[in-house]
Length: 288
Length: 299
Image (cartoon, rainbow over all chains, first blue to last red; front, side, top):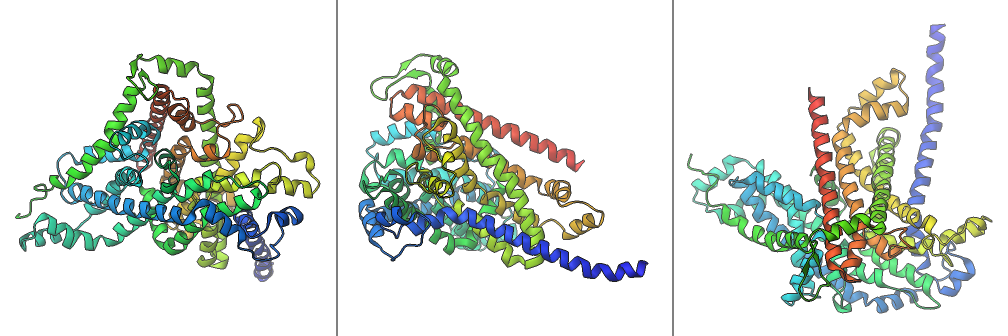
């Protein structure tokens, strides 16, 4: 009897697990299609004429791959300028933000200066601070010094705000830095600046680049403060321009889907380029 | 002992601390100061003590905004955390086991895609879906004969907030999924096998094995997403402007309106200060609960 069962079980189990196995893959695929559906329909309808949209509905494949919408919306958004603005702002912010974080973390993590815990708490508090709390005084201050409606205002503000997280992250990375290396460098006659530039930066290059990518994308995606600070059309970023875009009478549906597509595309490209770096960053970010 | 750690480093902190003073500390203090005044943004602010705070407590829009924020916590924290957890275990346990890690990471990347967009662009995508006259949601309902369910999703009291919440769940799901899947790598697969042999169901394995083991990551996800939900601005601004009526007003948008549209800067500053207070309180309570839990576990 026992022998009999032993023979039957191996035959039975694989078949039932096979069904579950492919059923679960099917289920997951359906769920993924549901999640990606909004982005797929946005793309489909960016290449249709308005007339075709109403004739065949939003789910049909575009009959021709017309770039007319993309061209028209690109011009109306002044997309080239917006891309340039977003890119320059994000790049400058990431550079300045990483530099500030690096200097802070060098003093806190490598230097272990007095009051280290106090400074760290101070930076951690700033990570969770809602921007609404700073918005009006910053708006007033920047107006007073003539930096309102300037792309630099956003660079300065976000370099500092992002450096709170950067300082926290790098300080904890630097705490584990081997003391022997530092001691050897000092014996060789390194001063503090040389220590930073020749030893700490090269060894921590991977952490710095993760931070750079993170700051770049965070700045690119920001909305609330740019909305307040960048009022003129020539200074606006991609997300701002897409949010402000109202289609045109008679072409609302396809124009708006095209605008949404143009807002999504740069991020999709970043995701593809930086996928590995980002995965590391999300997990590093979760440790905070 | 030629190497002295603490000497000569303080200078490196000067730019960071100065910048912080100007961009964070001074505005922070100024905002608290402004909250005790009546000010239209021009001229001299008039000191009125705690009048703005009293006004807030009697203001139905103020309460509506915080209530809506709580609903958004459900959409950004509760639902994505639970779904993300189930999905992460499913991908890690079943899919990786049968189809290998590459298939699992393919799905993980797919579910993560909405997270890479600026939230305001995600909101614009969904505004397009919900559009009452030509939007795809109504179009699909009509084409399968469910006309009676087609609706002005963002334009009506009963569905506007739900519609925003739907967008947020979609947007947010990938975040807990990615974090939980990386946390699961710590879990020994033999634990699952042992549990299966003992006759545990899939759900029992999730609640008895996975949840306790990846509890630190669950805490982090809950806290960060709840704070994020309290700060929600872009979807409300771009989808409904807080309406219809007070149906979708949130604290952040309410303060923005007072700052720049009314303008009633003193009251806006009060709402921003209260929002900050709620977020700090939330973080402190949460972190102390977490620390106590960890201490209990280590005993």
